[in-house]
Length: 230
Image 1 (cartoon, helix red, strand yellow):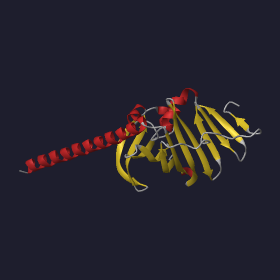
Image 2 (cartoon, one colour):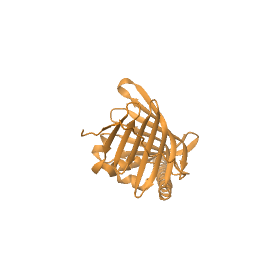
Image 3 (cartoon, one colour):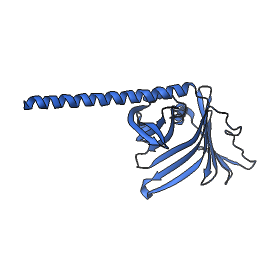
Image 4 (cartoon, one colour):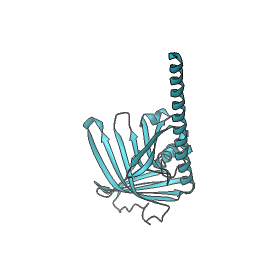
């Protein structure tokens, strides 16, 4: 009798485990499908952001805030971040070039993504215009359950990079996806050092007309242009 009870208990645990795995698979498939749908209709996004950069060695957090813009340009995604706090800075990624302009010192840094362009763009579209099922090309994707963020019931995705060079930058990336819209409203990039960036996105406007100057950098005649190779 005791043996039968143990067998029944073991069978019940296996059934529960199987049900949990099925629920997780269904949850993951559902959120990836919502991201696929959003990607198919994606044209542009405008939002406000708050970036908290935590540095473990000094146990300190630096915060940047401003507005961000994304738009589809052919097969690529362009991005612009207008950082307003603590100092004004404009970052634009377009045609494989990253431009970082700091008005305070009138300096523009230009970085050519070169052969890493596709990889760079893949990070840009995480939760903003990228297909959900494309995530598995670069990451092991796990469904972390549902979590309430900014009053929204989100689907939590935990991404583990497959490539060693990406793992050297990030152990994992966590996306909190709003399933109704198929976009992320929060992201966390975890580094091997214990440092991380927590990004929160609010006032998200999807496929609306963007400001005419969203992707423009207004430099001056005296602007100093700096590139990594001189």
